[in-house]
Image (cartoon, rainbow, N blue to C red; front, top):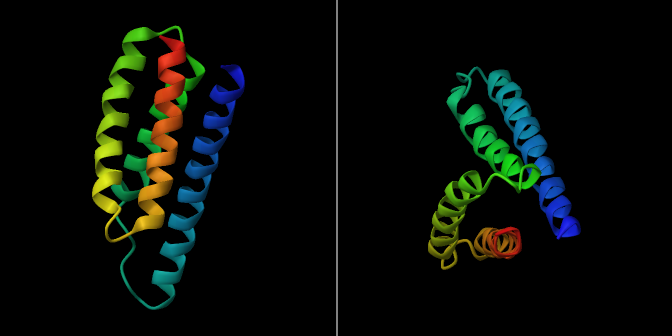
Length: 109
């Protein structure tokens, strides 16, 4: 279970770093054309969600926290299923991550 937990934590951490870098580079690119910068909420909301996911992976003994995050992962699974017809790559990545997290959840409970 530790290998799965740390694999998911590394993947989630890398996604958070990538989101931050894409956001920063995108803002500087938009600024070079004179466009307004993106809202800070677009940066911090996904980072907060990814931080909560990492928290659930780092604190497996907090069962209530795991249950709350599991509800969010189920919602993310449903959203990934909705993405499949139009954006199959993004939908499959989401389904893969959610299925791995739900396996981790089953092992942690």
